[in-house]
Length: 582
Image 1 (cartoon, rainbow, N blue to C red):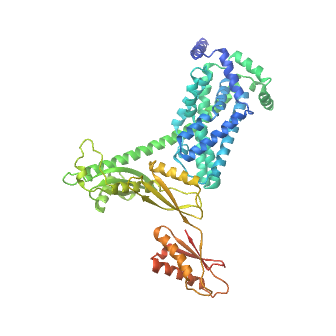
Image 2: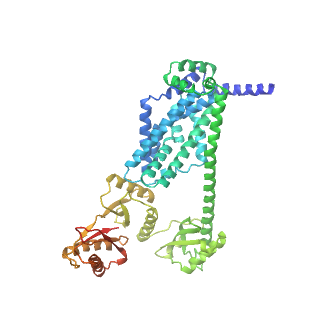
Image 3: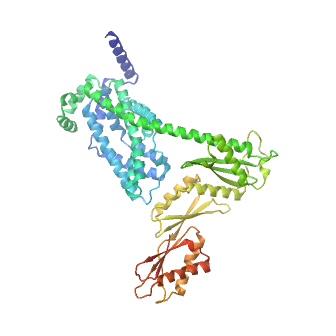
């Protein structure tokens, strides 16, 4: 018993020491408690305006992939107050405060998510940006940041205003509460409009990150408030007197009357209520902790495997393939990347070389790499991208220890840029009904490189959508000065008419087909669909013969491969045939 009293005395001395060093006296503790209680007022109009604006700014920042805009939303977001209220409620065992803080936080989350869903539904396209993806896979490091942020936020709000103004913005940025909520809203918006499974996956990831931050901040705030002993005897008396006249607290007390043993629950500092709330916090924090730890372990394992493969690729290439037999340099690696497809490992290897590698040499490299990695040769696939150099002279000036920067011709730089553009634009998607068809590299002396994006659509894309897509392309290319040009191919149908009961093309029809064929020649990936309409008074197979006439004209005059032309029968229509790009 004496040992227990000694430990209690040590803890009390620590509390007093911490409070004195932070200049938190009895009056300040009362102010903190009352300030947090007052901040949970549901009728605070300015609070809800801040929630709306923060949610809107965060959602737009996520879509624009702009960290600066997202940071602005973090600074505006007022959610930290409700979470600190929960932490104080846990420290004091105050069920009434916990109920008010939880209610306001829950309503705030619903408002932010609903507003994000509304904004996403109004967007012309739904592109997954890196800023969104970064918030769908939380790991244990996010939990650690939230733990520290909750502790710092609690100390900052408790300490006297001297110097706090510089710490609160940093805390708001560190905890990042609003962006994950907006990712949840973005995911629900995607689920409702584009893809249910992918959208729910995004919403789940954002929700897990927010829940991790919420529980961690609440837990560390509780520890800080316990250490500072905010719920002193004088503070409890002041709060009891204040609640007798506070409308929302009276309303919560009436609700608690319906629960058994409500008198004990309503007492500030009740051991049973405090134990109940702390147990809930500890149990709930285990879920995001285990999820994030598993995710982090998986990421570390994959990164180690990738580093091992990249090291093996570079080592084997340097020893066996980077030089000629006489020791003269032949090539050097520009970039190595690996990816898994089903069970097959695909190695993308970009090199600059003075002499192209034969298929036999490439197969030899794959065999050596398979032996090094202890994998069957059939499960490895090499995609070697060779950029020829003008001569091998550029290698002669390279020192052994520290290679100098290679010299490239304009053609080599263009080829390299085009290859980067191909990789960057691989998964680029346009807002429906627009569909990307092709892209072209445009160069001009004295001007930055430009990319022309050709897309198929029955209407012109909105200016805002074009700006957002152009910014996304520049971000993917890491080329802020690139000029992005949008060229539309009209996807609307063209009508072809024949003379009555005739299968011979009219001069007007030939002009239409010439324009269509010219576009097909310019864009090799473009295809054509012919819908043949059969009229009742015409003999059978007339429509089929007319389709053959159209195909023959395109093939004989314009050399259009008939494999690019599909056909189907339509209903009776004023037009004998309808042509449409697909």
